[in-house]
Figure 1 (cartoon, rainbow, N blue to C red):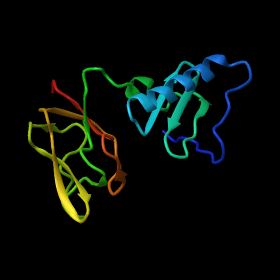
Figure 2 (figure 1 turned 90 degrees about the horizontal axis):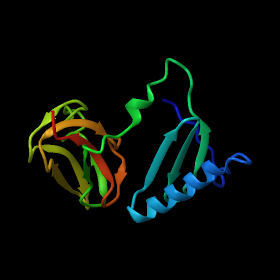
Figure 3 (figure 1 turned 180 degrees about the horizontal axis):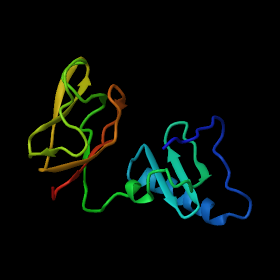
Length: 159
């Protein structure tokens, strides 16, 4: 699903849409409380996304086209376990640029299985799964920088 981005100051909610303004404020507070780098919520006819560091909050109409992914695909089950980055560094899905990724979305993993590598200070640190289950979602792109505590994977403990 393509998402429009705009530069400049955070976008203001449409006049009279107090619900969007309140949701944006609540998400910004949640961002700080949980030390998240980004949070996005889609509800009815609006989508609110708040990012840290030059954050922009955007309020946009929700897609109505039938060929878009269903809203259900973007919801996160409370039963999913989040694997977080244990350090600051660069996220790699494979041991080398030519190697296959350690895991793909949908793969079943065992506790202790290597999920990815985080390079920190020229050291390659293998990040292992803390539980067994099915990889529901990979939240970081290969080669991107990650922060301590940033969510990397969502794992469904009941494959």
